[in-house]
Amino acid sequence: MTALIGIDWGSSNLRAFRYDAGGNVTERRSSPRGITTVAAGDFEAVLGTVIAGWSDAHVPVVLAGMVGSRNGMREVPYLPCPVDLAQLASAVTQVVTALGRCHIVPGVMVKREGAPAEVMRGEETQVLGSGVRDGTVVLPGTHSKWTRVERGRIVDFRTAMTGELFAILLGHSLLGRLTEVARDDHDAFELGARRALADPMLSMLLFSARAEVVTGGLPGSSVPSYLSGLLIGAEIGAMTRRDLQPTLIGDPTLCARYRRVFELADVGPVTIVEGDAATERGLWTIGRAVG
Amino acid sequence: MTALIGIDWGSSNLRAFRYDAGGNVTERRSSPRGITTVAAGDFEAVLGTVIAGWSDAHVPVVLAGMVGSRNGMREVPYLPCPVDLAQLASAVTQVVTALGRCHIVPGVMVKREGAPAEVMRGEETQVLGSGVRDGTVVLPGTHSKWTRVERGRIVDFRTAMTGELFAILLGHSLLGRLTEVARDDHDAFELGARRALADPMLSMLLFSARAEVVTGGLPGSSVPSYLSGLLIGAEIGAMTRRDLQPTLIGDPTLCARYRRVFELADVGPVTIVEGDAATERGLWTIGRAVG
Image (cartoon, rainbow over the protein chains, first blue to last red):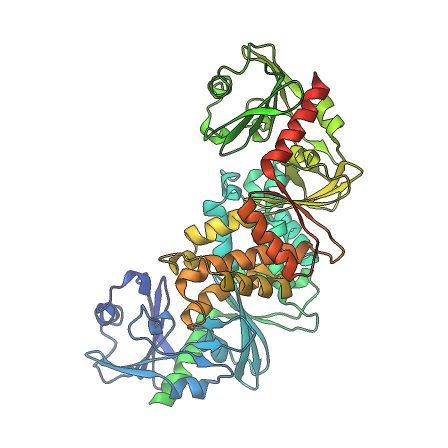
């Protein structure tokens, strides 16, 4: 018996969770059909393929992530901070489909006079599903999110383009051309991280990857590790206060890198929550609230 | 009569200057044959085409820039800071060619225990040719250089990858995809610059370009201007002390943007030196010293 279907539908992939009446996930599926691969009008068909056999169209489907953006299944306006799970649940947009009722979770924004705007879609469900009631929750990734949670509400957040910068610098800048074969170099990673923590002015640090190579300080194969250290170090250096006890949500390998840089910055203890666990809990809580 | 030929040969183009015996430039030529377009062994032929008719092979040729790098005409080791024009002249590498004696100017490096390495090739000739004896000389561009000059010597410098970041962010990140048609938007430029000056943590600022667009704060066509403001603001914010009276060398349009951000940062007065004038003077001074 399926009691609820939860979907985390981002730009580049989709993950689906099947719940029993007790809120336990009994099956997981994933698909590379992120919203950037889906033409307008095809969302229902793609979703139907992914969740085939799970439902008889009477089971509610809760969807979070970029599926609620302009290029998604249906645009759902952002809710301004502060936001809790109950508010997310009461602001879902319902879309009636042949697959059953789909409830699309809104994204969250920061929009304040004098401050840069911020937006997220999908991370709000993970953050509030993590169980953290008060603290700083960090989601490393393409666009790392640093969220401040107070009494179970997201009250503020910032975004660092760390993962995207890493990818485009290696793929399209002269730094990438230094690297013929990449080697995981822990010392280079820590060197980059320590330098960026000491002086997190990223635009002044990046070129040092090239300068170290041409002056013999670093082999070209270690540039990706050094660059990873610089970028994560600059992010954590920019955001960290020493009294922080952060929770990390996401991919275990990436979270381990962030934990190491938090240690170098003398920040901790650090808690790591596995990404799917947080998503599953968030979608379930919203799904129960919407019916 | 040609007394000296000066060449500024960078990665993506070449500029040639013909001098009379009084050090006046009597003719200028340029070519898109930067060193990245020239195969090993073809440098002499390319140079010969550019300076055709200027010389009878008895006129010395002084070359500065990436032409002295590993992928150039001949690799010339970097000189460590501090460096003045006389030291550059005494460290040229001489290459005898059918075109006459070619003197390749070394680049300059910073290599100190505990500090990120730094390298430049070509900018040292501009900085020392600018006539600045003491002060901060900034060369905005793909890799902006911030050099500290004391008693006519370059004593230290840092590099900001500002121009390259701008190009790859617009060309390859999701920020570029927001911009269908670019429009020069001075207000967006200043908004970006003020935000970055207030908090020059670049990785935390870049995403705001996207967030402003999706929340209606900025049209997509203004993203390049906003991004330019963010990047130049972050660079100047990271490097600036208020007692600075910087000299800018380079392209007039780009120097005007930097001057505006210096004004926003309450730094000045700012002096602008046209790039070619500094190069011409630097190459002439080195050429006179080598023969």
